Length: 235
Image 1: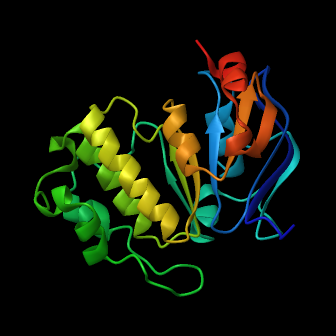
Image 2: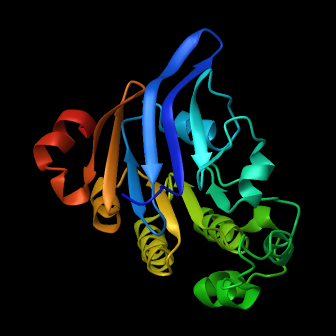
């Protein structure tokens, strides 16, 4: 197996005295799409935050391209080619759409600039129509497009999407799924967290299912049967 782009090994993470992650292993290869699944409160976001330096694991190791980044700050991990679209979007409401986008624009780790300002506007034509609007004036779907577009302008090797279509109208959500598919096709490795398990399975090469801070399934998407979905993900 080729060396993973991002790999977490035996991660134990706590919030205060609460033991949230119990020895979690996670990996994603270059250009791979992985669906990270689980009911609410099972540790998905905590795993992401632990891998990106927002939360410090008490035990375990995180490597990016083979380099130990367990103790690294979030901004350094971002500079190493990881873009994060968090739940809640995290846009700057007092900046215009144009300012939100341009503030993030930079070349990738290897100097490439495949995702330019113009390409983002072509990918998200709604944003092109609202360049002078404040981020806080946008609809939820437009804010999600802005957040994804801003992440792409960092020319990442890995894009992590936490609750990509949460709270969006079906038509807007469908548009976001199409765009995520295009991103995946461009060769960017993608971690997708979303409650629309069918859509995630359609896009992902592999799915990882978490229950109570542990991984209970990690295999090709076509191995995630209806029985497993019902057992671990059903309401």
